[in-house]
Length: 91
Image (cartoon, rainbow, N blue to C red; front, side, top):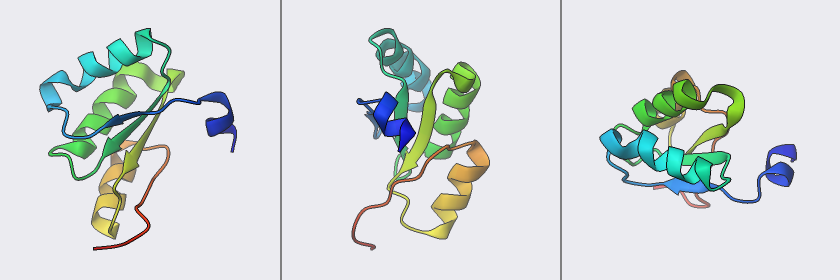
């Protein structure tokens, strides 16, 4: 997968407060990170995905993690998620 070949580090954003999400991502970006996974069990996870997509445009990949049901999947997709990760097990 080309995304993984070109981005060996993914910043996982789990329970990052929404008001700090962009600042957190900017700090990671300054350190060379270009791929972010927002955990969808984070309060306002979809909103954070949308915020990061708006902030960085095509400069980064922003995806959704902990996608355990269709509701989370659709919310992440509507927010602009570029990839989806799901745990091996489902709740």
